Amino acid sequence: MQKIMIVEDDRKIAGLLQTHIERYGFEVIVTEQFDRVLEQFQQIKPDLVLLDVNLPSYDGYYWCRQIRSHSICPVLFISARAGEMDQIMALENGADDYITKPFDYGIVMAKIRSQLRRAYGEYATRQEERLVQKLGLTLYPERLELIYADHTVPLTKKEADIIESLLERYPRVASREALLEKLWDDQNFVDENTLNVNITRVRKKLQELGLEQAVETVRGIGYRLQMDHKRETGRDPV
Image: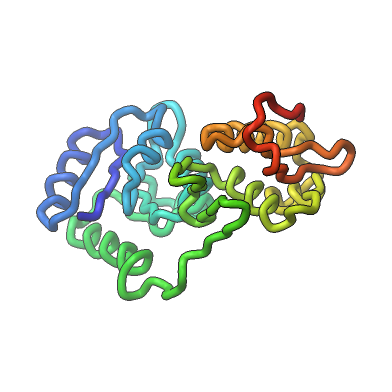
């Protein structure tokens, strides 16, 4: 059963949407914790998100960007804002479609089904899921998962990009410049410490798999995998 996540602070609208969508055989989860939308998204793993623009704490544009940094799950905005700029902002922040209130439930269902077909069904691109395997590690870049010795850890998009670069370049060094270029479009606007933070997170994910000191710092150059010392304790400085 496919899952639909609704992020809508108007409880009446959220309830009506849930009731209507469930009639068509979907599982519907309505979130009410509007400061933890991404965390709930990662727990629920929905097949599609209905997202309002006006929300407490952060607006829907912010949460759409957060979801997009982790997933290509279809996101449909539902909003009373009918201006062209609002729709443009939604699309530029990663939305797949924009539905204005008041809306017809038949149109909502048609758009939901269309996006699900496009993402997972008859219109989805037919291609093998990409994976990178080396040193006993299996990385699924699109699934955002890393597997080692039958253990799996979830990754963020940036963590997956870093690990993919390290695997592709092993046993060579992945330079800081190459990593920054892969992770961000414009290196000039990236704090130097940002890469350090993401490298630290990658090390923690590898430690969760039992791989200690798996990322070696090559001072003045960059980083490389050092799997022959993977079972030793301690950690390399950034």
